[in-house]
Length: 213
Image 1 (cartoon, helix red, strand yellow):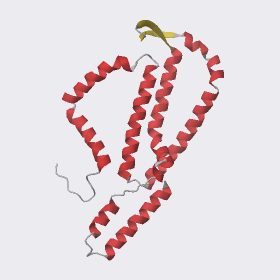
Image 2 (cartoon, helix red, strand yellow; image 1 turned 90 degrees about the vertical axis):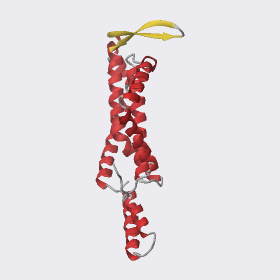
Image 3 (cartoon, helix red, strand yellow; image 1 turned 90 degrees about the horizontal axis):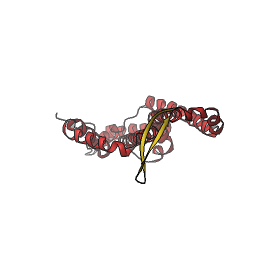
Image 4 (tube, rainbow, N blue to C red; image 1 turned 180 degrees about the horizontal axis):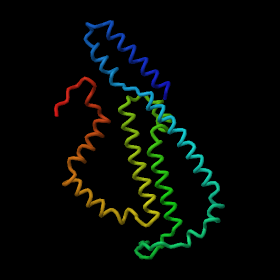
């Protein structure tokens, strides 16, 4: 990531130098605007690198826990015998009561914690593994990481809550009601959110443009 940042900074300096040497050239201003469009923040990259190290350590620890799960499960098997509440589940049209144990709640909490850590540390991992090998502008890379974090949040939330009996089939009516609420009460906030995603991907606004509010 640092090499990519240095390379972009060198390109910016070269483009600005060419713009100063050719002040009468028609495209000099556009070239400077394109160079200013690439914002570099080495401190942010350093922070993401530290987060990447932390995420790798967390992944190693998680793999170690999974590898030793058979021993851990036998030691904490009594947690599966502690029933906290019951939920109704339907399998092939037959309803049955399924107990939610203390072990399931602890695993759900662990899944949510891992999801939170992935949301915080995934941009650095994605930058190192994929984005730095692609010719992308910072806005496009940020849009990709933002959408990916939302998907991780959605998937981790569904997995974690399903372990404690809160499944999508039971939430779909609530989600439908919230969607109606978004359409009326929170219409402006939801529209601003979608507009922000469109701006991230299409980048219709550049440095030097005048925005009237």
